[in-house]
Amino acid sequence: MRCPFCHNSDSRVLESRPAADSPNVRRRRECISCKKRWTTQERFEVIDLTVLKRNHHREPFDRFKILRGLTLACQKTGVTRAQIERLVDEIETELHERARGEVSVQFIGELVLAHLKQLNEVAYIRYASVYHRFRNADDFIADLIGKPRDQP
Image 1 (cartoon, helix red, strand yellow):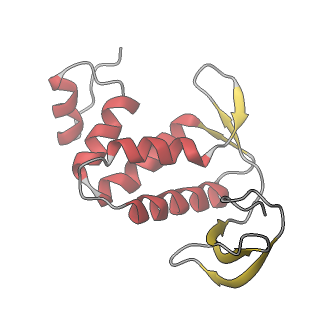
Image 2: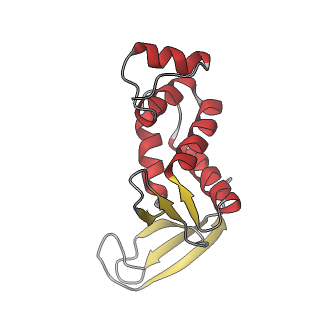
């Protein structure tokens, strides 16, 4: 592991422990050269998922795309970074449990919306407005009351 301070490639692990509410492992490290310490978080790699996009292209699953979208949707809502990380972990775990190698972008979007609706309604509407491509206030209202809306 390369030191983030002096960029030396030699470091040692001082402590390892499971991250709270996550399958990740937190490691406390120390640089052999400059003696500075930092924390890393490692996550287990599981079977790779392929995402089938709306345009029928396929690409590798990237959890950071979900994380980025949720971070934007949750800005100024009081949802913490830890809650967002936990939500992404839950979504990724559920995808690996339910999908067998390939999953549609629509399935991922609906799964994110289902989890987000339970966490914060404002963040849910923000995310839904982009995911469902809302065109006007009527689309927002239709989503809020559960009424089908006209498709573009």
